[in-house]
Image 1 (cartoon, rainbow, N blue to C red):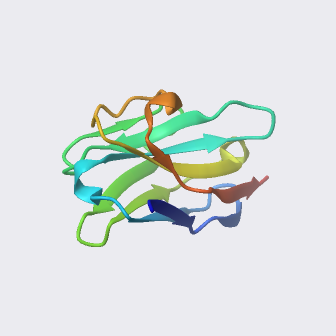
Image 2: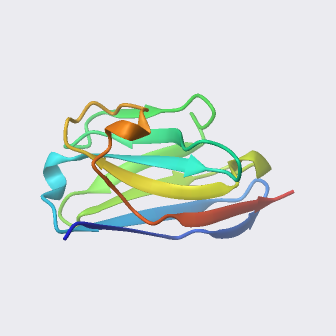
Length: 124
């Protein structure tokens, strides 16, 4: 069955960096756009950024532009989220999602598969 497994979360101070990974199995990874979303307590899941099947196109939420970078390695079936200049408001559970239509939509409802999430906590 399809599995998306996130890793790399943790506790970091304001201004610090983390790199999240999402390893996929059970699907043809290279035909799916991949995205990162996050969800803070009491809030809806929000789009962080996405990357197209080939990696040639990316899209970011305004709140993370210039600080976060998405990349993928289709040979390793893995997508990454490099996060820098972290702020307390970045604290959330981060999820990766796979989208067959390759639109990089910010609508979580359009994603076909999800991982279980990894916690990122940024202390002030």
